[in-house]
Image (cartoon, rainbow, N blue to C red):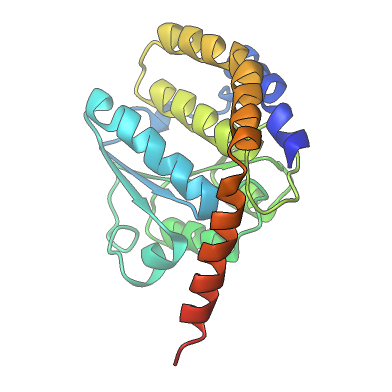
Length: 216
């Protein structure tokens, strides 16, 4: 996992440097939609919630974030056709079955779709109306690190472009934060090494949780 953590600086810098190319496929018809629906799960869902918090008030648009399961079976968002809606799906691998089903429901109801994935040949990339390729590479481990930060950055820049907001100051802030990543990672490692008692506490909590989970 540390390999992917350490790759973040290069990955994020590359996204910033290629912003125009990465977002060049966005159609003009998607500009200034009245309602954005984002569906994702796991770390991609956390990335979506973070971007929603950062941007919703600034763009003056309603941003709805749902899991694929919620969106398919309980939420009316995709089942009510509306020309001002836009569905954005997030999946680093581009293979989520639930997300694929959301894309089909949106298409059935004439809601345009954008997919952000790290694989432009994935099923989700092919199914969506527009695909944004996120150049972060594969990350075959459970906890996502470079995939999470790459999703936040790509989604943030994309929504700003959809609402025709200047990204110059944001890009400058991101560059500064990204340049500080290596030293922040080292500080975090050092803190963990100096507070290794947390490891034993974590194991205790895991044991308690397992016991509770086995209760009938």
